[in-house]
Length: 344
Ligand code: NAD
Ligand code: UFG
Image (cartoon, rainbow, N blue to C red):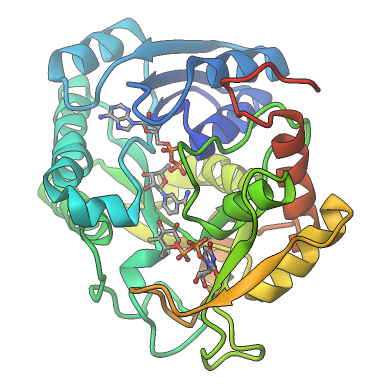
């Protein structure tokens, strides 16, 4: 199946990689993004990489009239809803912004979709809905709800909202994709994650250390109940994740109502294992120092990938070495992200 997919937040990290994969598979793509955390250069790079039928509208998902106009201008078959705010720490400081953009923006989008008669939706949720799981790997039947921050709570609320909408009206096909830890970049090095300021997440931070822009990786805790004492996560290559969205769009008809699907590799890596893999990719040791635990962190989370394989016919193919090598190619050829002149 192909058609026209509208990507809210399609200029962002995961959205831009998904745009590439969809265009390559023959989909037409309409990106809607207000550029709150992205650059128009990302959309240009996607065009340069793959060509294809790509439209871009600078618009805010909270703006009903603007969204109406986008749906009137395109014959949209399905929406992939990436747009939102995602910084955990910021969400604690600015909860109203998070509820307004993530929850309010989703309500608005659903109203506009319903008016336009579009009921196919793929939503970006997060493994954060599982909180600190008692049992790993987590499956879609693992308990949700013990999130520790407003960002995570917005994801839970939106998941409930989607289920309620699907119960109230027939005809909705909604895939709720719960991502684990996306890292890496397109192998061309032309698109990647471009975080503002000092990155909070391990791999973007580590890459800036490797590039000499930050002095040392701070390892947050070596006293977790894991093999080497550092936190374990299910890192997934962003291109694998993008391919998961293509698979979800292709199988949406099989979902009656709303259904959650975990997207991860099923393998966990510790902070020290990631640093070792990254050191190999960059060709020198990435310096680090041990610090105390970061508040709100959990020891271990990784998925059981069975449901994704069965529902979507999809599984992640790329390993940790490829993830960090591709991330490094993007970082080293675009040291200032989309702002700077790319050397490569
Ligand atoms: P991102 O910040 O790169 O992309 C989000 C995009 O949404 C940005 O381009 C931003 O400009 C846009 N946006 C924000 N507010 C908007 C608004 N009001 N109107 C229109 N556009 C708006 O983040 P990402 O890493 O690509 O994440 C995409 C989605 O996946 C988010 O919903 C995020 O919560 C979710 N997610 C991300 C991760 C991760 O680790 N990256 C993990 C789990 C879930
Ligand atoms: N870590 C460090 N040093 C750093 C950054 C992180 O040691 O500078 C460690 C963390 O303690 C953790 C691991 O590296 O053990 C991964 O941390 P990240 O910040 O990269 O990712 P998280 O798993 O903490 O967070 C991610 C998403 C959140 C989401 C959360 C739960 O970024 O949006 O998963 O699913 F809420």
